Amino acid sequence: MNRPSSRPLLTASSLALMLALTPALAQQPAAPEGAAEAQPLTAPESPAHQQQVMPESFADLVEQVSPAVVNITTTSTVSTPLVRGPQLPEGSPFSDLFREFGFPGFPPGEGNPFERGPQREQRSNALGSGFVVSADGLIVTNNHVIEGADEIEVEFFSGRQLPAKVIGKDEKTDIAVLKVESADALPFVKFGDSDVARVGDWVLALGNPLGQGFSASTGIVSARNRALSGTYDDFIQTDAAINRGNSGGPLFNMDGEVIGVNTAILSPNGGSIGIGFSMASNVVSKVVQQLEEFGETRRGWLGVKIQPVTDDIAESLGLSEVRGAMVTDVPAGPAADAGMKAGDVITRFDGGEVEDPRDLVRRVADAPVGEAVDVVVQRDGEAVEMKVTLGRRELAEGAGGRTEGAPQSADEVMGMTLTELTPEIAAELGVGDMQGLVVQSVDPSGPAADKGLAVGDVITEAGQQPVVTQVDLEARIKEARDAGRKSILVMVRRAGEPRFVALPVE
Image (tube, rainbow, N blue to C red; front, side):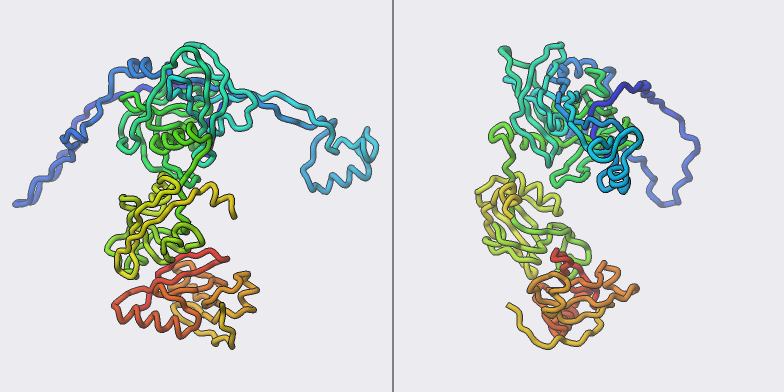
C-alpha cells in the first residue's frame, strides 16, 4: 500500500470516455410456453435512487470548489552521517574486520571509513494537498503529509502563500488539522454525508499530484467501507486518478461536498492504476471537530475484547441472526463495571444495531467519553440491557484461586487430546494461574483442526461455563446434545489471548 505523497515528474496519458449503444448480438431464446417472459434489469425509478447523469463538463464544479483546495509544502531537517566510504549495516561481520585491520588508505581504529562519524544536517522538502474547512483558516490534510515537518507552507489556488501551524493530528486515521492566519475570510468547503455515497456515484478529486500543482481528476465510487490496516478505517475506494502528492486532498461529490480525504493508493509501481482510497468524511469530520476543540482525539472506550459472530457460533448460541460482536474477554474497565461477561454478544449500542465488531469499534469511538450509553447483549438466549459509562481510549491505551491435585489422564474428544492444566504445564506455557484443559495433540483430519486449534491451546470454557476437568467438558457436551445443538461454544486461549470457537458435538 502506497501513501500518495510527492514524487518527481511522471507523464500521465489522457483517457477519453466514450459511450455507445450497440445492437444485440444474438436473440434471446424463447421462454418456455406458460413461463413468465424474462425482463432485463433496470435501474429503480424511486427519487431516492435517481441515476446520476454524466455531466457534459466538470468545469463548473471545479471552479466552485477549487479556491478552497491548497497545496502543502513541508520542510524538515534530516541528519546524515559524514562518511568517507561505504556504510555497513549494524552487526555486519565486515565492520569488525575493517575496524581491526583497517581499510585501504585508512589506518585501523578511528580513521576507519566504516565508523559512524559526525552528522550533517540537510533540509528536506515534501509536497501534499489539503482543503480549507472554515473561513478563519482551518485546513485538513493527512498526518503523513506534515509528519516531522519543521515548517509548513500552504499555497492557495490563487497563488497566495501562507505559513501554517499544526492544531492537532491523529495517527489512527492519518488526519491532521492546520491553521493559517488571514485578515480576509477564506473560501472553504463543507463535509458531506459519506454514508449516502453509492457505488457508481461520480466523484471529483483535487490536489497536487507528483508536485505538478493544482490538478483535477474524476471517476466513480468503486467500493465502500474498505479497511486497510487501521482500527478506524472506513475508506471509499475510487478509480479517480490519485497519485503521490494527492495525499490530504478532497474527494468531492457532485454537490461540491467533501465525502473523503485522499489517503492511499494500491499500486505495484507507485503510480495510479485506478485503485485509490479516501477516508470517509463521516469519520474525518468527527476527528477534525475533536482536534479543533481539544488538539487531540477523545474516543470512547468500552473495555472488551471482541470477535465476529460466525454461523457456527450463532447456531451454538441459538441466535437467529449472524450479527453483532462477541465478547471474548472483559478486563477491568467500563464493561466489567456494568456487568458484561465473556460470551455475551453485543447486538445494540447507544440505540443502534451492531452489525459486526468493526461497526461496534466505530460506534464506541464516536460515543461521548464519560457518559452512560445503553448497550444490549444476548446472554443465554435472552436480551440483557445495561448502561455503560464509557472511558477514554487514549488513556486506557496508555495505562497499562486454583485447586491443586493430580492431573486427569489425557483423553481424546472432538479430534484432540486434552489434559488438565497443572501448575507445571501452566508455567511452561506462561499462562499463570489459568484453569482449564490444555490441548496435547490434534488430529489433522478432525473437527478441532478444522477450527484452527493447536497444541498448547487452553480451553477455559464450554457452553459458556468454566471447565477445569474432562468431566466438566463432557457434561457441557452432553447438555448441548440434549438441547439439540449441533455444536458447542468453547473459549480457547492461545498465549493468553481469548477467542471463541464452535466445535461440532454430533
